[in-house]
Length: 496
Image (cartoon, rainbow, N blue to C red; front, side, top):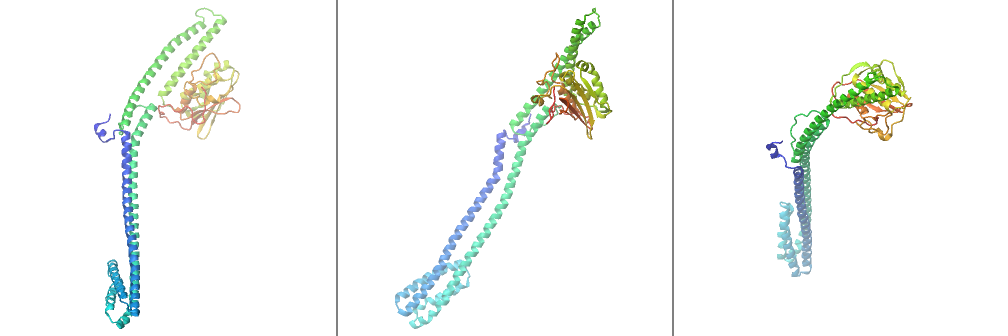
């Protein structure tokens, strides 16, 4: 159970955590969008104001040049025709020119041409008061006046260019600042995204480890409670309950198997003992027909005992994963197993071919014998009467390969991918009155994996069915994980 302190800072639900993550990650991006909008608005406003001012100043400079030209024209016309209305036009244009020049002074500041024009205006303002001859002599002032006006226009253009360059530099500064802010805020968003991803993934991975631990069947260890949203904490508590329940079911299964094996083997031993006494003639001589029936009863009892032992072997493999490798001759192990099946092979009429050259390897005697026992029993049960059983072995650089092949019907394709599953029985049926348990090859495959090897079905040129046991060069002595590994690896097939 979680403490009150952890519940205080933890979001109450996964939805709240995801929503909070979304809002916090989007916050820097929102700030970035707001600042970018502010900067763009500022640049847009500055560009609009500057454009308006540039248009107005350009228009004023052109008007100033036009006014200077009209002043000169009206003055020269007056000097020719001597009409007073021309002097009035001259005075009006001069006042307009003076007003525009005052704006230009505010724009250009201490520009020398502005001061010169102001002095020239003072002289030109007194022209109407002069006598006609003196007026005509002062007409030479207008060309320099026009040149100064043109200089003011060029100065205005330069001022506009300087302002545009300033706006461009300011825009570059804003762009640089936006790039820096973008890098910083996007980095902050990424960091926050990684943080919240970790906050979400961490409890999920803790639950995944818990589930793998429960599925592997390994002894439970004291683990810290999941720190995360309430849904995941509740799921962790449910997993605790599930683990406890699975432990109880496992204990009940073990108890059932122990009791079942005892309850089955005790009366079976009495039955076999009784058949042995009858066969020895304790109750009197038996006819050949009675001896035949008695032999069938004893054979069935022996088969039933073998099935019980297979079931116990399967249960033992699920809980005892220790191996004890030793260096020994694999040929000796194979001969010992064949000796156990000598009578069954003789009754089946199978011809046995087995290599006899010494071949030493590091392996577990008991586990390897159990594999070979199941493979040979499988060959006897499913092989053809009067057929062949061939056992081959070869040592490669890093592994040992032992083949157990027999004649008979080939394995159906639809059965191959499930034949290593416990209690699965394929379409082929055993030859004889008894039915198999479906765990023989499952036990053999588990025994192979205990030695870090594998059991697979391979193609053989002569015989219909060929199982290959592959053992590595060195077998670790530690136990494998308690969980059942997949019974069928890619490309490996087997038969129950």
